Image (cartoon, rainbow, N blue to C red; front, side):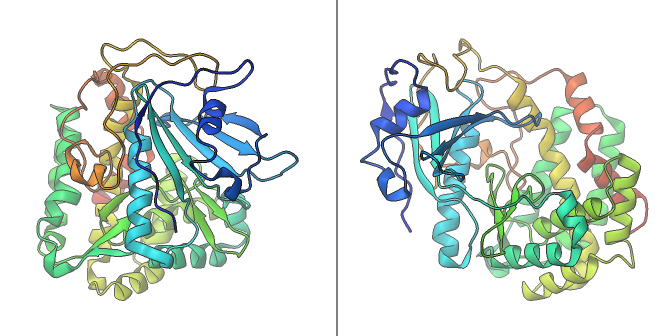
Length: 407
């Protein structure tokens, strides 16, 4: 396994006629990154994809060798100039996963390089290929989908033993909820829900739990079925090296339940939750077995399910604020992939292994959520944040799990 190169401050490339920014970067580092060893010749085709999800922060480029049906590389750049935290974090999380998990974790991208170019971070990864584990495929064979996810999540490493994991509740539950309350001050319904959640989680707070590596977004379109019939998982920018046991599997099984029932509206999604996690729910047994394999008391299962949705909902407002805000003092740059330099402000710190873990106050994930907006960003208006949070599926699931008495 090769470790990613450290990002360095490099002069912004001068683009050849008809070439893109990303093409120039790849040509400038072709030998250094051994792109020939990754199956890429000196000529290629670049296809740009702009994800349509509201909180997506990247433009993605797929790099194809001539005549190839599968890409040789995936390149990510921020959609907004200076918004480098997401790509830096994904690079760091993948590097840490490679170190902590070794060969145990299959089906994840490998970082080729993370490079800072005039305030724009470029992340280059190996591709994942195979059919998407989309709702139709899940509905066609739910047991297979369950087995795929359980196998992958079981392979994610334990990163801190229970006996040495002091302060885990504050880090993984209390701080994200505090961040959400600070973003929506004066919301009585939210304050009541947070208080009710902490009360219900009191047995969990008193338990000794290990930390686990956590993806935090195991659902379509981040899931593929690889050539060997194993789950492949992309988009690790929300990951945490010190996550909560059971979070990934709870999130994943809810996605499967919604897919199996074709539940795409809120009432149907809540019904899918009841079917999966209610007192006789089918998802309880695979989750219980997973907890036993992690040496966790399965009696904590209901509390861990509730904690999953509280944590997941708590990250949305901050992610939306960071996504929708323009960096202060920076002009809007040229569209990623177009000719010309993308103007930006001060160059970001070089990306290097451990960067995100060393600065948890700026980590946008469920393990160490921030308690304030990142420096240089102005949060979007409170009405927009409130609408986003109270309209989000994860918030509905959190409220339902805390108030409906189904667990």
